[in-house]
Picture 1 (cartoon, rainbow, N blue to C red):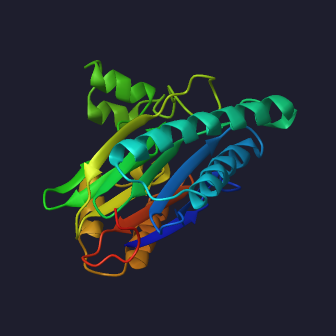
Picture 2 (tube, one colour):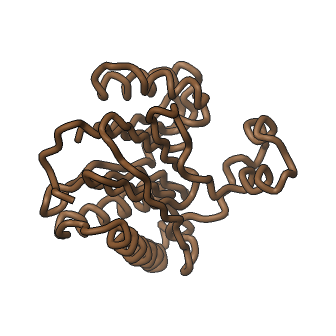
Picture 3 (cartoon, one colour):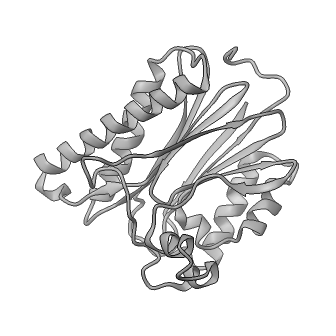
Length: 251
């Protein structure tokens, strides 16, 4: 299984509040996370980095996921504990009051990919059917679209398009969405913060993902285009590709 993580400060922000990474458990199974922090001063940095470090530490001590149900249970418990840790840190450190972070996390084995997310960082899958958005944003504008109050085109220009309905570290009962997909040879997964999706359309991202070139090159090209179009936000993404032959994990 191939994977690449790239993050960029963008053209406007004074620092990068995104975090993420690709990590492996005791049997070589892969976990990837992208987290987009929010909060004043350095608090967004703290929240997103805490989320990444928390899941990395837990995952690297974990044995093989024997089933999708096991992966979903692991993610559910880990995210609950992560949320508590971020909340506690904010309460104990005045400078971090009000901080929070989105998170999109995927566990990949040979047979399936289990995805969890909270907030508006997204996961897409590219396969024989093209590019499909797997996650649904926990945002005000997405709720307005879902209930038919505005169109998708309206959402792109809505003045409150950055307002989140859920994020880690903002509520004691922050529940993430969970789902499991078939994960087969040739498939690609894209995890990204809204710094990418606010600048590129789904069709444009699909055009990049279908290229038969190095994943790192695709990642760089995506970030460069987002920056060329203003880069007002931090830009982070992970691309994962399921190879025909996989060495890690027998599940």
